[in-house]
Length: 241
Image 1: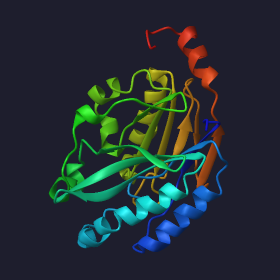
Image 2: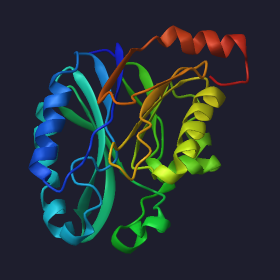
Image 3: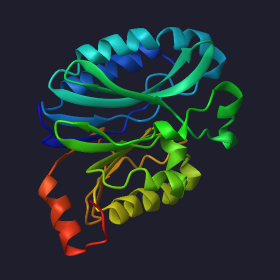
Image 4: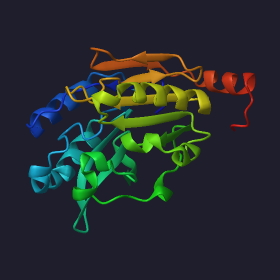
């Protein structure tokens, strides 16, 4: 497969996990083949701490179904998962029917009490990975705020950001995602929840810093033009390879 389109989702999450899953699978099934699809953070469950045992038990079920629906596509999202007795917010990358990359959220959002329910991952697991000849980096929501983590994304062709970003800090999300694209001269694809408490600022930013936001569109699609990356890096050479 190859990457021809970038797709950011803006979905509402309810307390009905199966309904969320059904809507998610229907949405990705409607996306063209050879697309890279980014979903909001924990879009299948939200941070439903009161039912943590139930939703972590469902993570394997979620993964199996998403894997089947990822043929000729790349699907990226996070879900809460229990590993060796500890709960992690796991980013998962499915490509062409397989799970090809995963890691735990390394910087938990203490203002939202994430540290009381989850275990942090390791910064060292934040690394660029490659699919179909395209270099991809991944930051999960709050990780976007740490400059030392930005350095780990340098050289990526696409940076993906699944998020559940607070509405009161919406302009921070807009500014940080756009700036990340400009400083790295690459595409940034950020997906935030469409729930009322969130920014609803899912969108795609080009290597030139031009932003397209989902707005009321649940599924935003934009053609991926790899040449735009090399053109921008030659035009303003800041040493990114």
